[in-house]
Amino acid sequence: MTTARIEHLVTSGTFSLDGGTWDVDNNVWIVGDDTEAVVIDAAHDADAIAKALGTRTLRAIICTHAHNDHIDAAPALAARTGAPILLHPDDLPLWKQTHPDRLPDGELSDGEKLTVAGVELTVLHTPGHAPGAVCLYAPELDTVFTGDTLFQGGPGATGRSFSHFPTIVESIRTRLLDLPAGTVVRTGHGDTTTVGAEAPNLQEWIDRGH
Image (cartoon, rainbow, N blue to C red; front, top):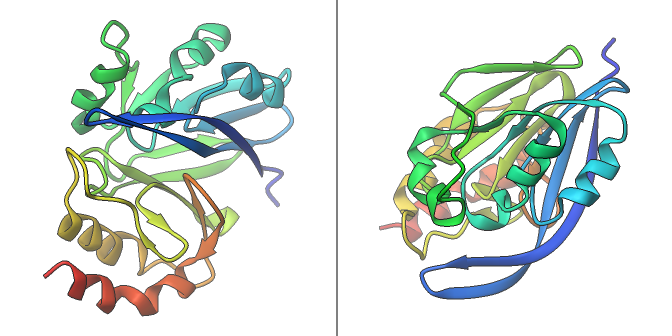
């Protein structure tokens, strides 16, 4: 029986790309037990994330993608905890827009397995919202962390630089919708959903992309 758990923190800040800036609330996910954890998307507020971690050892800061609102607090959190920042290399151009003088510490690759508190997180490369976007599937927790790839009600936004709607739909179709229907989708913004709740809308999304 695993003792790992999922904790949820909402932080607020701004998202900036292509010359525009918007106020956003981001979901920060902490996966671990009483002694160690990983953070998925260190958004906006390193102090709040560190407070939520408490005395636990932070094993990694995992970035689902490199839009600034998902990575802006990552270097400060890494400096405080010594944890490495992990990012898919296809998102380095986006990363450098926010942190030109501080590269990530390691690369995420499709199929890679990260372990924390006895639970495996499998990296699924899901480009579309961003070239290096990834989701993290934790079957023992009946959860997939989707960043901005899949939300309640549909795919993430693809109207800005580095994004492509047909690609995100294909990523969701081939990497996410074949997960068990009861898998909880924990997103980068907003409410959770399930794979089963989103799967019936696939054809509608495909039609939109043509």
